[in-house]
Length: 307
Image (cartoon, rainbow, N blue to C red; front, top):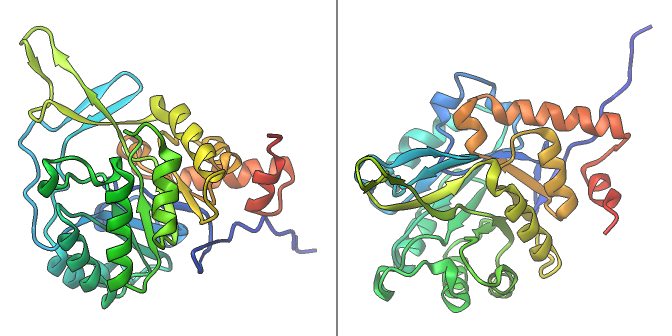
């Protein structure tokens, strides 16, 4: 007799878009063609692209990546070929796969964010993720995401030009992450993604110089997971919109921990730089965990948390 037993229902709804499962890639760690050599992209609930700007960005000088205890530092500087190339070359390739496409949007000014968002509104992507960790060149380089008013302004203006669901990606380099989350929700954010990288630095004591040419960089990897889980927990209690949690997820149980903290979905980043197939392996591990625990849906993971 054929075994008709079905596994758990992994579907999640993020701002009106149904994903087949709660796993996506983290922006900056996913390249469609390169990642697709290691696993079928159709297996993921969504894929989140590298940052897309209105024009090509050259990025920062090298060296711009370095290992450190429990993770890595990067100061790539959101190097990208620009929106025109992304629309012409990347989207058609990604549309070969049965997964949702989230385009990550970068900008140095509100106008740049809006110009890119407007161009992508006409493109065949499912959602926009707005990276408000970018420096505001009109305000002396302060990150948009570190000030509630600036974060709110970006959200408000992007929502005016794009009717696609807008995910706001929050920086952890703030005093009160919940305040920022409430500010972007109030201006129409359809979902929130957190956390982006922490700010870090390494010095080569033999050379007497910083390891990164940019001096500082974004710190990611398993060492930041407790900070990320705490921030997801705080934001879940501050807003009602869906949350995509990330920050040091290396296993399926790490993903479950974020869901218990309040995330509706998770993104895998640094783990994929160690093992390119990490996103689907983590998905498989999450499925096994749910089966072992007897969970029939992703929501049951969160309900199991005894806060």
